[in-house]
Image 1 (cartoon, rainbow, N blue to C red):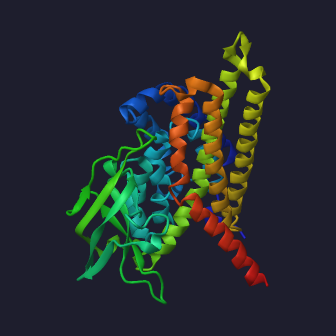
Image 2 (cartoon, rainbow, N blue to C red; image 1 turned 90 degrees about the vertical axis):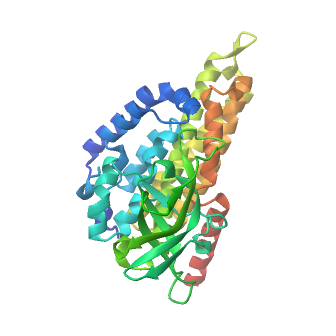
Length: 393
C-alpha cells in the first residue's frame, strides 16, 4: 500500500509548469554556458541565483518545510531534464534535495526539520552528506568516524572523503559510529554539524576527471562537539537506516540523471550524423553509424522506462531495495556505453575538449561509482533475489 505521506503535493498541471520552466532554464540559460562552467570549474552566481529563485534547491522538500513538494515519480522527470546539461548544475542543489535533505525529511525530529529544512529548501543553507571515508565507501558498515558521548553532548572525530558540496556547505549530515556493531544494530548514528563548528576542517577542492563545477573535498572532524539536539531523530541507531534509505532513493534519481545525459549524447550524435559529411555524403547515411545511433536509442528508451517504473514502485512502497539498485545499475552502465558511442559517431571531433560529447563522456563516468558502485548494486540485487526466494520457499 502506498504511504500517503509520500504522495506528491503538486498536481499534474502545476508540475507540468515546473518541469517546463526547468527545461527552458536548462536549455536556454545553462547549455549556452557549459564551456564557461567547464573551464571555470564553477557555476556562475547568476545561474545559481536563478536556480534558487525557481525553487530548485528544495524541489523535493515537502511544502510544509518550504520546498516544492515533488514526489519521487516527479523527481525522476526533473532529473532527466537536469541531466541534459552539465551535471554540475544538478550537483549544486542535489544534496539539498537528495541524500542530505532526505535524511532530515525522513528521520529528523520536528525541531530539527523546523530548524534546517526551510533554509535548505531556499538554498540559504547547502547541506552536505558526509558518509564516505577512506576504506568505507559503498559499504557504510566500515565507518571509522567516531562519536563519543560527553556529558550532555557528543564529540565527533574522523575524516570523510569525496564529500559533494563540502567547499560550500553550511551543514554536514555526518555519519559516525557510536559503538561497535552488535546484536542491537550497526551502531551508526547521524549528526547535524554546522560547517563553522570548531574542529571542522574542509580540505582543498578535489581535482576530478570530469564534472567541473561540481565541487568535492575531504572533511576532517577533530573533536567536534555537538549537543544532543544534533543527533538526528534523537536516537543513536537511526544512522544506518537513514543512510540506506536515502541512498536507495538517491539511486533512482541518479538513474534518471543518467537517462537525461544519454538523451543529450544521443541528440548531439543524431544532429552531427545528419550534418557532418565524408566525401560529400552525410555520415548518418552510413549503415554502421545508423547502427550506433540505434543502440544509443534502444539503451536510452529502456533506461527511461526502467527508471520510471522504479520510481512508481518506490512511491507505492512495493520495492525500495532491488528496483532502485536495478535502475541505477542499468542506467549508469547504459549512459557510459551511450557516451562512448557518441564520441565514436563524432570521430576526431568527439575527442575535442569544447565538444559536448567529450564532456559528457567524462562526466558520466562518476555515475557508476557514487551512491553505491555497480558492483555493490549487483550484490544488492542478487542477494535480494536469493533472499526472497528462500523466504518464499
